[in-house]
Image 1 (cartoon, one colour):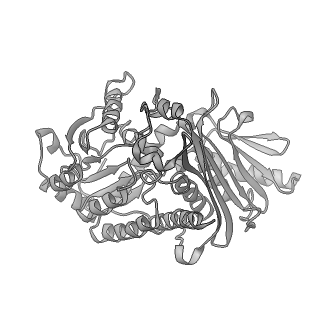
Image 2 (cartoon, rainbow, N blue to C red):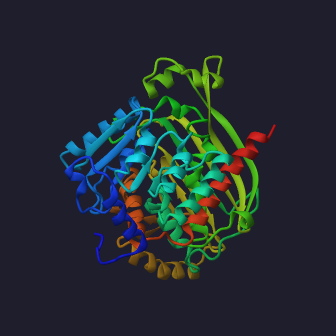
Image 3 (tube, rainbow, N blue to C red):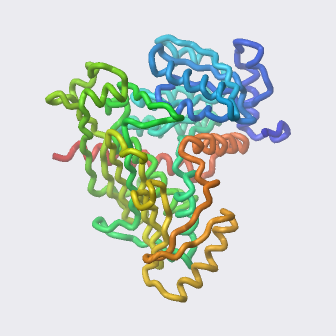
Length: 460
């Protein structure tokens, strides 16, 4: 809980902002220091931020949106969370609907933290205008989907600094336990050694993510907005999901290290290609019976071509890395989104696999470069450090090395990661600052994705 005696600049600003904000009812005058303003919640991630409640966050949430199915889907999710039997939430939604929703949100200043998760076409503009107006911003990825957006995002970070507010994106994959353990073990010289440099043909770090347009969320079939299939509104795959992959490459390979996009990044070979969807598949996913006019540019012979797939090969501080995103229509029965990751060290490779052999659950492996009794002894001893941080994890000897056995309690699921990100962000608000490496590395991340797209689109 926030301590009122801790008067960091940001907390002071938050208190002043709350005190000066107009209220719509008495409940919005509570002592909770964080008051959410949810803007145009077009993506289900907006609701997932509110799947949990937070000690520091007021139960009254002001929502500003255009009328339509997007906001209705968000409201239905919040209602389900409020009415569930197990640990229900208690959100009190104050809704404004109208075409001037964003102007209204800025003018009314009914809270101090803007949550953005929806159509990406104007998201960067919303981010910039929100921080200009003195709001903190917690934004779903991607915060920029093209080079123009990248330049505006840089300006937004500068404005956030000048206005003493915190701008942050929702990087849920940092909280998946195998990702976290892969990073943790890569810090051990005894287990991992040093990170290899790799080559363009054999990168030292590879992260590949497979997603699906038709999926289940919170036990319900996910209804995608029609605009989700328009790369001008959602963004291409190379600037969307790859945001997570590029983030994890930086976060794991160079933990808590400032990365300068102008000096430390070199974009190599890039690729982009479409996922092809029939009208029947589009209808099942969106409930729309026809393609909207804005998708006509992408429909050929009755098939919708969505440029959701991409590959970025690049060099980061001299290390060759590759990020790959693939979107299929629907996962095979009993499966879901999958992830593959490898970090190549001088002593061992740390590999996450999530295929049929792993029952489509991520599993972390330690695969030594030169197996020996000495290495096994060093591994066993060094692994105790990770066990102290994650009590209950164990090593299981297999033919290629070791599988890291992880207790079920650490597998909280993707949806729970949103609360973990929010809690971390609220800690930053309490401190009045982000870690010094976060902002430059967010800028670097979006430089890589947007520059890769620019290069891919320019290729013939």
